[in-house]
Length: 386
Image (cartoon, rainbow, N blue to C red; front, side, top):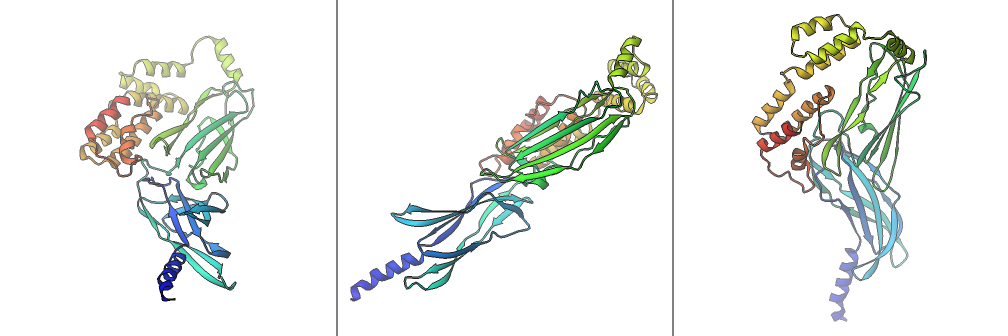
């Protein structure tokens, strides 16, 4: 009888450690706001009568469950076990070390003598290093971002007294609703604008939440005089390409068709238009331009100053970028580069969208810790593409 004791102890030890729970997280270095897919996987040989599991809240992250819990039988290590899986999406709120867990699955199991007893199975915590978001503002990180812009009529040829309804739908894959930007302003001195309440909706999917925000404006010019409603740039981090991108709400011409037809019939340009054209052709004559701009309407004055700024040799954002490059701080270079490129987009200067690819690959690459890169090479890439 004694010879069976070691075997019995081995079997009891194996049964005691057969029930297990773990957190499965892919190897990654997420940025702030990026979805981290987490799977809770339990492997149980005990007969389970009841179970309860609550994912822990934290000030360091937001989280949501992506699908219903799954229970199934699998062959593991040569024997059949009961497998439990729960899929969670975690969104870091700040840069630095992030700890997820521990997580405890509270079970009620049935013993061989049919009595029930509680059994707690705990998954140890996992740790990640979270990188700063590579731009200022709302940390919008997504697998994909689309902009749908619909107009109720041709904005540059409205009927007299007609109101244009503009609806912009922003859809982000893998982002929470509060991480999408607030509604942009559609205001001009010559425009009457009414904004309808925005709608934000989110639905879970196997690859993460799909969030949609709908903005709607009712727009009408105060006069029939044609104008241009400026575009809006929405910066976001592409978690697949590991680089910053920009989604654009396009600029649109605006005005009544009757006013445009009357101007065409008059034959010739108004004094304001001639002034703007002269500004574009004679940008070097700064003193003369200031005199012309001073006599323009507020809208034309704003357009003229924008054109003038394009040709001025002084660019404060470029100077700040060069200063960050000299200091060799790549995160600071990335933030300064975003301000520099935002100014270029605002002024209508060429922007390829690939200026920061080298920086993004170094700082937020798939391999984890950022590799060393030379700041001079990063600077050449920035200024060559801009």
